Length: 335
Image (tube, rainbow, N blue to C red; front, side, top):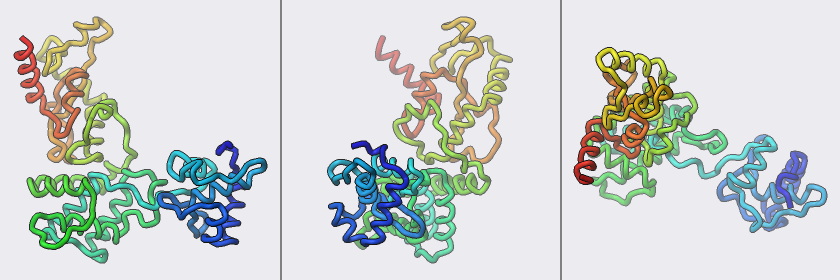
């Protein structure tokens, strides 16, 4: 049994048999249930991807159809092999709402006096279009109903019915809804400003590039309060080589070394010539306050890699002064 032996022609043959027998008889023949997570789209029709792959396996010379318990229809099994063969497979459930998306939906509710909005509302239609352009979810995980106006409207009601003053029964929603809702209740103007920044970044194209992976992100245990898109822009600014060199030159104009602001570590002192001129930059302006403005040198602080990671480790991020205070307390406790 080798899933990789299945060929494009085998899948086409399985699709043809599905069309001939119909869904119910096809699933019955191969002892499969209806797809619960992934669907295969071919032409203008949708198919139960796991059942199609099971049948395709049996239609390949020398192989038997796969039994349901031998594999799964998810990303790491049937869906993966079908995509490798060039077929379109998507999640029928749709991806979980990202924090950025929830912030934008909650902002609609916040600006609408904490009331949900209908799918025909132009604000919902506009947000639906914006969400479909965000680079937060791989295309293969999006279904035909991905963030459509009905789904966006439903999310606004998930948020509105979780408001403490709502008298009726809340709709289901997700765990992320409660977190974002609490933050809007705590500081609505600030969170609304975050939503404005995301929208502005999308309109300008600044936030539409594919998300990149930065070393510091690997050590962040929770994403920034402002969401992944603004967080990505923050890390991009910190990685700007031109800005870093300008900050280093500006610092050396009045200082004799490149010591870390918080712990005093000096790469040259520790590693000699190999460490000369090296240090990282941290952007101190909060994400929701930085907006589209040009980064100023005074907005950057020079840090060693360890301190930089400690600042970004958990959300909300520490300020350099807060980290400096923690270092002092740790030294005092250890003495």
